[in-house]
Amino acid sequence: MPEHLPNAPSWTCTGCGGEWPCATKQSQLLAEYGGARAALAVYLGSCLVVAAQDLPTLPLTRVRNRFLGWLPRARI
Image (tube, rainbow, N blue to C red; front, side, top):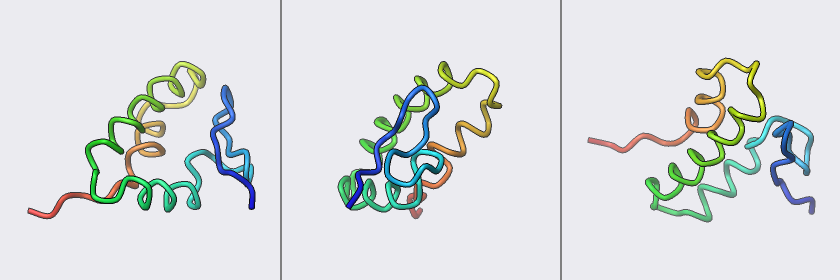
Protein backbone atom coordinates (compact mmCIF):
# COMPACT_ATOMS: atom_id res chain seq x y z
CA MET A 1 0.00 0.00 0.00
CA PRO A 2 1.59 3.31 -1.02
CA GLU A 3 2.16 6.02 1.54
CA HIS A 4 0.38 9.26 0.81
CA LEU A 5 3.08 11.73 1.77
CA PRO A 6 3.67 15.27 0.51
CA ASN A 7 6.27 15.65 -2.23
CA ALA A 8 7.61 19.17 -1.85
CA PRO A 9 8.04 21.59 -3.53
CA SER A 10 5.19 20.53 -5.84
CA TRP A 11 3.05 19.33 -2.93
CA THR A 12 1.79 16.33 -4.84
CA CYS A 13 1.00 13.04 -3.15
CA THR A 14 3.70 10.35 -3.33
CA GLY A 15 1.02 7.66 -3.24
CA CYS A 16 -1.42 8.75 -5.93
CA GLY A 17 0.08 11.82 -7.60
CA GLY A 18 -2.85 14.08 -6.70
CA GLU A 19 -2.71 17.32 -4.76
CA TRP A 20 -1.60 16.71 -1.20
CA PRO A 21 -3.43 16.17 1.08
CA CYS A 22 -5.33 13.83 -1.22
CA ALA A 23 -8.65 12.28 -0.19
CA THR A 24 -6.88 9.16 1.12
CA LYS A 25 -4.50 11.22 3.25
CA GLN A 26 -7.36 13.35 4.53
CA SER A 27 -9.10 10.18 5.78
CA GLN A 28 -5.85 8.93 7.30
CA LEU A 29 -5.24 12.24 9.07
CA LEU A 30 -8.77 12.34 10.49
CA ALA A 31 -8.31 8.81 11.86
CA GLU A 32 -4.81 9.55 13.17
CA TYR A 33 -5.81 12.75 14.98
CA GLY A 34 -9.20 11.44 16.10
CA GLY A 35 -11.06 14.18 17.93
CA ALA A 36 -8.02 16.45 18.19
CA ARG A 37 -9.19 18.89 15.51
CA ALA A 38 -7.09 21.75 16.82
CA ALA A 39 -3.89 19.69 16.68
CA LEU A 40 -4.71 18.59 13.14
CA ALA A 41 -5.41 22.19 12.12
CA VAL A 42 -2.05 23.30 13.57
CA TYR A 43 -0.24 20.55 11.65
CA LEU A 44 -2.00 21.39 8.40
CA GLY A 45 -1.48 25.10 9.00
CA SER A 46 2.27 24.54 9.22
CA CYS A 47 2.10 22.57 5.95
CA LEU A 48 0.09 25.41 4.42
CA VAL A 49 2.79 27.97 5.28
CA VAL A 50 5.52 25.91 3.61
CA ALA A 51 3.32 25.09 0.60
CA ALA A 52 2.45 28.76 0.12
CA GLN A 53 6.17 29.52 -0.05
CA ASP A 54 6.82 26.59 -2.43
CA LEU A 55 3.84 27.47 -4.67
CA PRO A 56 3.93 31.29 -4.85
CA THR A 57 1.75 31.49 -7.98
CA LEU A 58 -1.10 29.52 -6.39
CA PRO A 59 -3.76 31.87 -4.98
CA LEU A 60 -3.65 31.88 -1.18
CA THR A 61 -7.38 31.17 -0.90
CA ARG A 62 -6.88 28.00 -2.97
CA VAL A 63 -3.98 26.92 -0.75
CA ARG A 64 -6.08 27.58 2.36
CA ASN A 65 -9.00 25.59 1.01
CA ARG A 66 -6.72 22.74 -0.05
CA PHE A 67 -5.09 22.39 3.37
CA LEU A 68 -7.80 23.53 5.78
CA GLY A 69 -11.07 23.76 3.86
CA TRP A 70 -11.89 20.07 4.17
CA LEU A 71 -11.58 19.91 7.98
CA PRO A 72 -14.82 19.10 9.79
CA ARG A 73 -16.34 22.06 11.59
CA ALA A 74 -17.09 21.93 15.32
CA ARG A 75 -20.78 21.71 16.12
CA ILE A 76 -22.16 24.50 18.27
